[in-house]
Image (cartoon, rainbow, N blue to C red; front, side, top):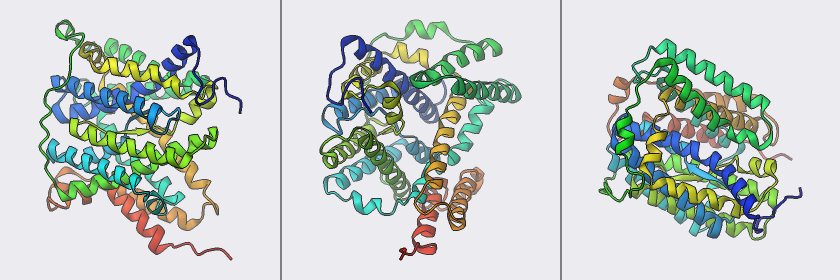
Amino acid sequence: MNFRRGLDEWPTFSELILYGLQWLVISVPGVVILGMLVGQMHFGNGHPSVILYLQKLFFVTALTLGVQVLAGHRLPLVLGPAAVLLVGVVSSRGSGLDTLYTSMMIGGATLTLLSLFGLFPLIQKLFTPRVVALVLLLIAFTLAPSIMRLLCGLSSGNPPLGNLLFSFALLFGMFILHRLMTGVWKAALIVVAMVLGSLVYHGVFQTEIHESAFASAPLVAGFWRELTLHPVLDAGVLISFLCCYLALAINDLGSITSMGEILHPTDMESRVSRGIGITGGANILAGFLGVLGPVNFSLSPGVVMASGCASRFALLPAALVLMLIAFSPATLLVLTTIPGVVIGCVLLYILCAQVSAGMMVAFNSPGGFQFQDGLTLGLSLLLGTIIAFLPEPVTASFPSVLRPILGNGFVIGVLAVLILEHLVFVRRPSG
């Protein structure tokens, strides 16, 4: 394919603004949605620390994006907080923040070491197409309880039935727009849904927005406070997050290599090594700051194909604006007015794409899709989903050391698929 701008070619100023805005529109929703969701889990809705959490998350995202484009994989890949780490946070909510983010720092360090010592080929052998498909599906299915609570709007004070009806209308509206929009304009769909959905929701349910909070929020402020991470090691939480980081590593590897297949740049092996190494380092920084770590997004190749611009430098304006937002509490306060119901709808829409990707990987795997493949995926997916929906009193009865593992649907699902794939239904070499 012929691109308007090549990988190492600088766009014109007007193109830089246009394509930078495109990448910004794709990047911001993921940071806002996951940041608000996790921030409210940690501190509660409306707590000032939620803004601080978003500041740190935008900072890590902007810094990592700039470093990756200039010195890491040096490819046009947008990134943001890893949804798979949200699974670990949700499953370990009974643990303290120091425990959670200590495990994330160790996970990031493990990722960096695997990259430095070239051990990824050994790990990659475990992740056959069926395992990768299961990982993609599990991320969506094990987040279902959290999405269910958001769609019902249990903390909004509005009737759950009204929230559900609004959610259904917004979701089907998003899918209709997805059908009608073409090319790069589809990238703006999530932003449109967030803005219009929020306005309609506030209008229909007459929710109160305290204007005094906006007046008191500083336009510019740093976030170098509450950096008091005290390392706390919990074996169960650590094992849970290491499983999440294995999935994150495969996601990162897949994103980088898929872009390589499109652009065919030189020295792909070193690009992969540097890219994953910087992702690991960024996750160490994120753990220290107490926020979710980033990952390269696999949707980037589609954006490049749709826009026709393969220049990595087009992402730099997006990184700059993300950095500016990180230092503007007033801007972030506006973003926190997005209702939880709207966040739940957008997250569900995004995870539908995740499920679609998982099914494509499963059905397009070498050798076709066989009955035993369905058994492997079916049991693993059902086990993970059942664990995710276990009542809290049940998980609370588990031994504290094992609770982050046995109560984590994602970990149980991944362990199940690895056992079935590599020990039970072992594929014999053909011929």
